[in-house]
Image 1 (spheres, one colour):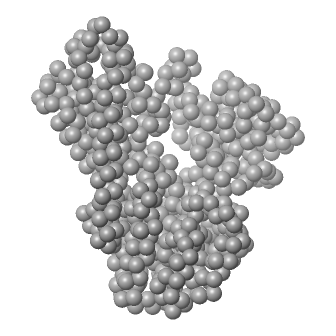
Image 2 (cartoon, one colour):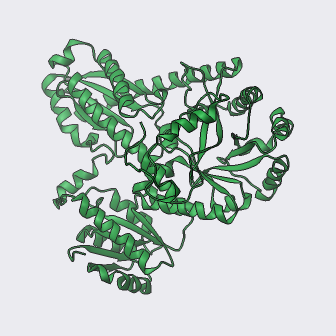
Image 3 (cartoon, helix red, strand yellow):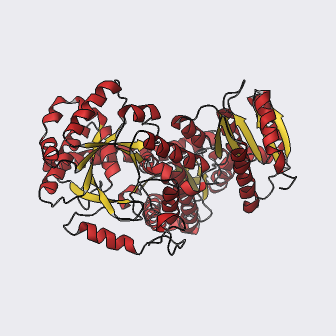
Length: 581
């Protein structure tokens, strides 16, 4: 190990600092130490170490605060951060992910574990061959004003150039672009995926600004934002050819088309943009900055009006879908990890073709937002039951999504579907989405036991998302533990996610549950799920949701037969690193 590497250990317990120094001695690194969060932050900013090991609970500043401060500034964002704590709960590890930590160590830790994790981080930094970061204080201040997701400047950095256009040309065009459904995208795919989506949006906006508005100035509204401004010289040839509103609308259409090409796994209805546009004329008697910011407000207000109009449209559309019972029931295959044989199907409900609700997650999240959740849930169960009654169920399992709150409605116990499930004993699994707090787990577990007595198994959805805590999972003792999609995304490159999944697998084994990973879309994600011991797999890598046919199992088996096999374990045959098309 090169002696040029520098490590910083921050812990208020000197015994822990001494222990880590002994463990890390074979790495031949320079080791610094700090006794509290403020000192750790100052030393990291001064010495720019390669890796910082942060105790979570330190005086003055917590490890989470120090990590967030380091990752939030470009000058120190390259520093690898390892959080050290005695708290290994899922919610704590998720917090570590949110603040940007690279890895996580839970006390007490073993020498070998510490050495391996730090070695991996140093080797990764060396392979990335990151360029040295400039130490110019002014550059550091400028980095604070850049959006880290896109690399674009924020408005304060471009305001002087914008003022020049307004003074020299006498007028200025302003276009505001907002990502539609950004909260739903992040909720479904996870923040890391959404950051990549926003980065691509920034790239495409920059290209479109150049093509559609000669010398247009693009800026993010703020750091980690989901919207952008373009400031336009209206007298340029390209801008003068058509009106700014028409040009902005054309740009919106091109944005949608380009992003659909870049993110084909997203449903087409998930990718959309609201665009507002205005123009202002130079008024010498009014402060320049005020003129510009007022124009920005007008452009943004146009988008907010469009958003409210769109929401009203969607609400009417959803009410019509529910009233006319126009939902579609599809089936997502679930396969065994060991041999890809079909375990069963998750029952999914979507809106009809050519509707705005082709994505199941969007459909149900919008129903919750508009207080139509119960009506939609009842319709989804009714539609599913109709399809299931006309289908040869065979020996397959069927997973049915239910909100935990539904069990508070007494009428549900007499629902026709429960009767049907009881008649088909051992064929159905209630997949509980715990998005609202369950006040009394003992009482709720009694309810679940009533369903188990009818031959209905129980799965906990969103495990690892923060909704379903380890305590809740252990208390409910489900038959299946479904690991949330954001944990599976980028699993191969994020040690914290690997640890979280490993914890969930170990917990499942202790309580006699099987694990099911959802949202698998790449070969690497599959390999890591197999490596970590997950029992069941689901995702577009294997098959898309489909109409259930009598030959469904055979079709799925045929589809997965040509998929690349892992390089280890019971499936090791002819592995390749290429994803299935």
